Image 1 (spheres, rainbow, N blue to C red):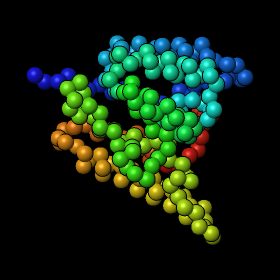
Image 2: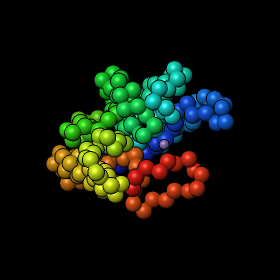
Image 3: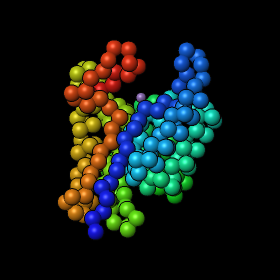
Image 4: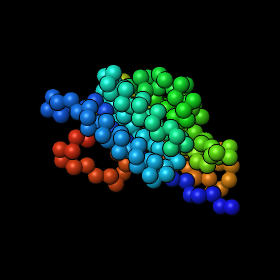
Length: 212
Ligand SMILES: [Mn+2]
């Protein structure tokens, strides 16, 4: 019997805790997360991917954290795996602190990048124990993690080294993921929190100029 196709829902940039003109918006965040949980259930989502900026700040309020953990708990019975990577707004260490505990709920958290590509290569297994998806869970790559500075470098040198470092990091994680593929049709998915070539930004949309 054929297995039903794997359903993946991709989301990002929740920015829980973000204020608007000084107003707290916890009701809006709570409503959003309720809606997302309902959508996951109705659409029978197998894998939820959160590609960065869960929280708006590196030290989220208790109320923001409560919303986040409550959501993860609520979707547990509907969604087989959750993959969360840190964005540029998140504190990588804050997000990764409950990593071991969350893994018990099939929530995989990647805070900072690692020099070991295995740390960012997730082989997710279906109910039958067989691999059903490989995720290159690459978080937001910080300049200081990727690039070593040298004296007398120009801005162009720095940027070129950063882009090369990002490219090299993705290549290493993807190469490992490809080698872990136990069958040729096993899907492979890569996350990122970055501008990709060909992407567009709009004036005043709140997106920060990062790198492409
Ligand atoms: Mn963001």
